[in-house]
Amino acid sequence: MEGKVVIITGSTSGIGLQTAKDLRQLGATIIVTCRDEVRGRAAVEALQSMAECTGEVHMLSLDLMCYNSILEFCREVRETFEVIDVLICNAGIMGKAFELSSDGIESHMATNLFGHYVIINNLFDHLERTSGRILLVSSGLYKGATHMPLTKQLMGEDNWDYDGRFAYAFSKLAINLYTSEMARILKRTKSNVKVVCIRPGFVRGTELGRETHWVLRKAAAPLIWLFSKSLQDGTQSLVMASTAPSESLENGGMYHDGELEPFNEMVTEENAKTLFQMLQTMENLLIKRSKLPKDALDEASKFACKFV
Image (cartoon, rainbow, N blue to C red; front, side, top):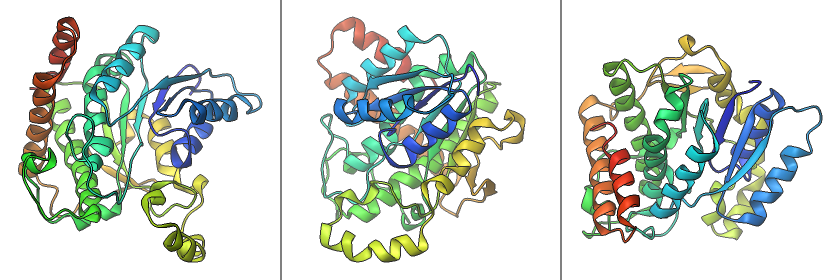
C-alpha cells in the first residue's frame, strides 16, 4: 500500500480506526474523517505514533447527517489530493430512535448509505484515475429487512410504523442493493473501479451499540466478549479487499471472512434499481431545498447526475 491514498469514514474508533492502523502499517496514506475534532485528533495521534510507518495521516471534518458538510468534505479532498486509491465507507449508526438528518432524511439511511452515496459520486473521478476501489461496510442483519420503504417515508413526509431495528436492517440491505447496481453501472460504462461490500461479522470494540441503554450494554458484555470477534479479526475482509489484486475481487460482491458470500432473495436487480432511484430522488430534493450559493449548487447538481 506504499503511496496509496485511503479514505476511511468512521475512523476515530472501532473497525474504522483498526483498519486505518492495519493499512498504515502497510504504508498507506490515511485520511481520517471526524465529526468531533477532539476524537479526530486522538485518532490521528494514535496513527502517527505507530513505529516505522511511511504513509501520511490527514484529518478532515465530515458529518454524514449534513449534506453541506459532505459537499465541503468532498471539495477539500479534490483540492488536496490528486487521486484516491481506496474509499472505505465504514461510518454507521444502529438502533436510534426516529430522527431526521439536518436535511430531512431518516438517520440510519442518511449516515449508513446516503452520505456515502454522495461522497462516491463527488470523488469518483479521483478513484477512476487509479482504477481504485470502493468498500461499503454491510451487516448480516440486512436480512431483517423484508420490504422496501417508500422514499417519502425515509424523508419524514409520510407516517410509518418506525422501528430502529428495521431502519438499520434496511440501511444495510440498501448498501447491498447499491453495491449490486453500482457494479452493473461500472460494467456498462467500462470503468476499472471496483465496488464491493464487506460483512465484518459480530465484532467487539465498536461503538455501534452506543444507542442501546447502558444497563443492557453492561448485561450483554460477557456474551459479547464470548461470541464476538476481536477488532483485528473484524478488519480481515476490509484489509483483504483493500490490498488484493483488483482482478481477484468480484465486482458487486459481498465478502465475509475473506470469502465471497451470496446475497439473500431481497437483493434483486429490480430492488437495486429502485434503491438507486430513491437515492437520486433524495439528493435532487436536497439540492432544491438547499440555500447554498449558486456555484456550489451547480457543482452539486453536476455530481448528483454522475450516473443518471
